[in-house]
Image (cartoon, rainbow, N blue to C red):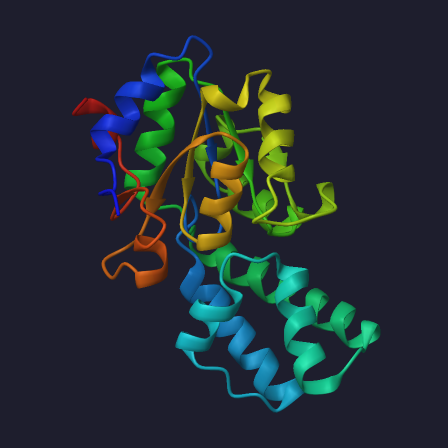
Length: 233
């Protein structure tokens, strides 16, 4: 099995593209909010489904899917088909998320500095995410990062979520570039597979404890978003 490429190799190849652009996943990538989401989902599923979900179950089965898909899968497993409950849990999840990110932005200083670096270099950027649009706008509206990224593809804008490439291809179209011009930052297996299926380059953001599933995708990895990823090339 071939070794995973180095970040410098991926960035150098991408930098040579005439129409280079960047797409960020949101939850867990541009926004360091997976602990927030894990806490919200865990509480909601315990209270309404009687399911005491573990962090490992969340990481292995649900991470990378849209909010709706996550809730639909959980409800289907523990309550059967119940569309009213799905909508109720989606509304509760949205309300709790907005409350928590209002208290403290989940976009780290290093991620914000990366976005500012790309903006100075006139690199167009977009977000492609399975999150609800209200979540993304709540975060971007409270920090400077929102001044640089205005193009969004959220769960409301696609028929098929990741790993289907639909969202990424729509993101490239919004940016006005070819898929081959795009560098994607992702943190989940469905996201990585969707980016690659769209014909884009991808760097996985792993945090301090990369999952075996992400490493098995054999893409370049970085612990965190940082402008250093580009300064060093």
